Image (cartoon, rainbow, N blue to C red; front, side, top):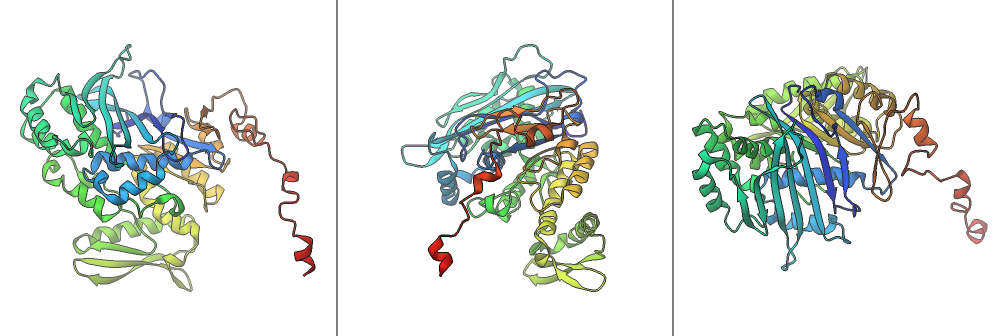
Length: 458
């Protein structure tokens, strides 16, 4: 394994937006051996026609993270509106399954978390079921041991093989009673599990697996363009509400986890609300951001910060300084503004986290995009999964295994498999990739934009 302790192996989703069929993304070989090297599988590009469901996959990642970390997430009426709009109308439910690799005392385990969201009789979206399972990564059997299982708000199974944590089990059962229909087990049990670990030296595998799902959630990040973000519907990872949710755990994890490592601090082209005691760190981030943007705009000299006092915060605006003029970052090109936002995501991937980005190629020049991807492929310690329409990155992606997936209009995944010297980009352009029939011709547009003769005469 690399420096990253968590590696996403498989991700399945069904029932979000247009995805009425289960979509499965595979990031690693089916069989994991001791020779497995995550850095050989650290990137994936998802291609597909408009409306195939690419954005739905990335959006489901955001929902999963919020469900795992925020115990009040489903109690928010705005979030309920989000699910009402986003869950597939044909199915009426959403299933998400994430399987990841985690290291425990030099032993590697495959951990699988499954959750189902659907509407109850009161027309409220609730957790119908959830389950956490594991097995040794190198085990020949696919049978998994259950850490916990919840059905209709009732605990069916919980840490059955974690004998030294019987008092923890009792506390979790008591604390989560009548709450599991609206909040996930990891979100509700986080405080107890982390506090329990600080006061005891535990070696029980099930206890450690229980803790790993929270680490997995905190290392998961997703980016969507403004048009697909639906940020007004839900608290996402860079809004104050969700930062507060994460800060609630600090009292329990200071001696176990460095929680700041998982906080995603988004740098905004417009306004950045920065706590006064964090301003020095913010300045350092801006200096690094400037170095990043200079790669794309070589004439950029520096990025200045104009700050206005606002109670315990500074309202900070970024000013781009060039040779003979200055301009507010909010008035920069769409591509530069996007790069400012994406900077933190790229940093997280490089440091070992799992990052999903929707429409990575939009507003970014192909040459710069490919160079950036080459860097992340070679030096990134984490994982990057992105959706795109640009075939340029295929020449970078094809160097890695499990790196190119094609999502068909009927929501099926077709993975690229190396075959001699065949180029995935050439085959894709010619419509020769299964599930991606580009049966369109310039003649198809004849008559579409022709003006009506009467209108033309006027």
